[in-house]
Structure formats: C-alpha cells, structure tokens
Length: 79
Image (cartoon, rainbow, N blue to C red; front, top):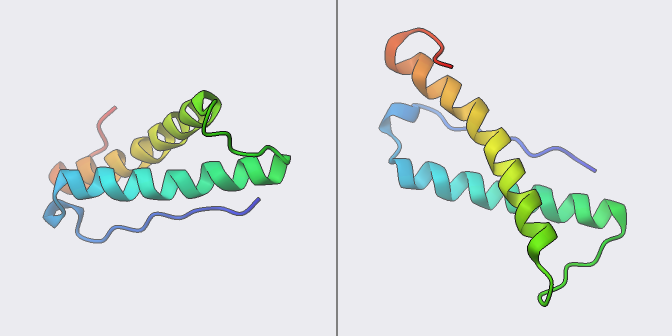
C-alpha cells in the first residue's frame, strides 16, 4: 500500500465544503488501495465495510487538517 498526502495551502482561504470534498476524495483512494492490497473486491451490494473504512480514514485526515487550520487561525493547536 502507498500513502495519500493531502496538501492544502492557505487553509484559511479555502471554503470548508472544499476541504470536505478533498478529504473524502483522497480518503476514497486510500480505502480502495487498502482493499486492493488485502485482495478484497469492492461489492456494490455490500459496501458497508468500505463505508466504515472510508469514514475512519476521513476522520484521521480531518484530525490532521484541523490542527493545521486551528494553528493558522490563532497560532496554537486546539484539541
């Protein structure tokens, strides 16, 4: 498996919905690569495992991105 890197510059200037769009887009690539690496085929009739993995990956990306956004807003990290 490879790694996905989401790079957003000047996050204060990027609309929140665009950040969500980019995170979900990149998370779907990561989830697909994980499934592929494990030899699991995506199944349109049973997509719940993919949806849970996608949600988890999106959350991980958001945790990192939000730290950057909040640090840019006030110079400190928010928990």
